[in-house]
Amino acid sequence: METYLQQLLQPRSPLLTELEQHCERDRIPNIQPEAAQFIRLLLQMHGAQRMLELGTAYGYSALHWCEAAPAAQLVTIELAAERAAIARGYFARARVEQRVQLLEGDAGQLVPHLEGEFDVVFIDAAKGQYRLFFEQALEKTRSGGLIITDNVLFRGLVAAEDDQLIEPRHRKMIEKIRAFNRFICEHPQCTTSIVPIGDGLAVSLKI
Image: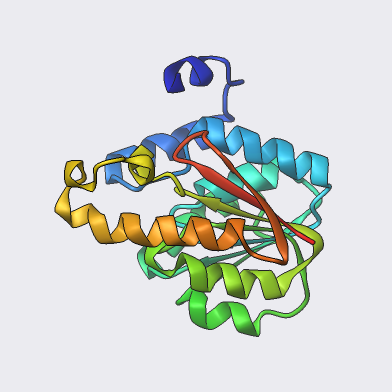
């Protein structure tokens, strides 16, 4: 199914294609292209003007969002300085550095100090801290805004009926993601749908 969906995607820009290859060489995980295309559509439908991203890496998803919302401002946060430096280089080449603010540090410490509200928040950072990130993002999202969380199906393992089939090193992470998914789906301030595209996207509307 994944291969079929990817065959239907429009070609990425040359810079995004180059960045995909760069990330593949360095083994930097990115949002899958079909999931990125879905979020691009949401951004266009939502008319996002101010966006927040937790987890920049090399800037792959950020460039997607900048292409999809060419009038929007983006704040993106990356913990690793070496990754942030590479992302800045790609932002400069894409000529979006004037509307992208890249902050270095722990998102859990930085988000509470951000000023203003955001139309869309994208969470793709440390999965073990997803609940903290979501709670902080919710405080910074306007009513009617979206919080989009990646990797909430974690290779489909969250749906495993027998946890003995899951590698021991993944079991605690799976437990945390399952708990997170229940948390956001039951949250009184949100309406959430989990979309089985890419590695699983949770789309939460703040009500």
